[in-house]
Length: 68
Image 1 (tube, rainbow, N blue to C red):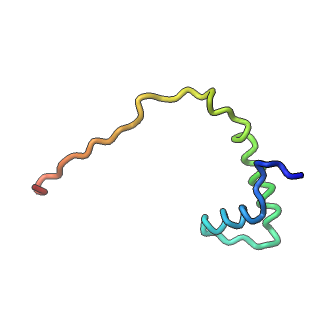
Image 2: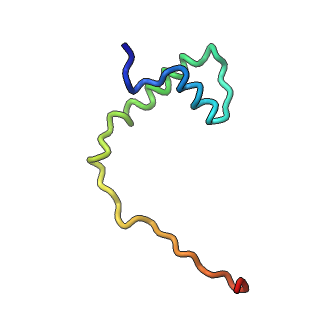
């Protein structure tokens, strides 16, 4: 049985297409393994324990001179 967080080969292909890169078919298993290894620390992180920074950044539009 596979880990529910593990990418399927089809999901991996979809991500590769979305990224606009080309990866040879015979390398997909290796890429899948590398991606799983890279995501392990992120998946182990409990984002609820991270203190949020307030206030959020805001942007105030300004009127350009000459655009009346």
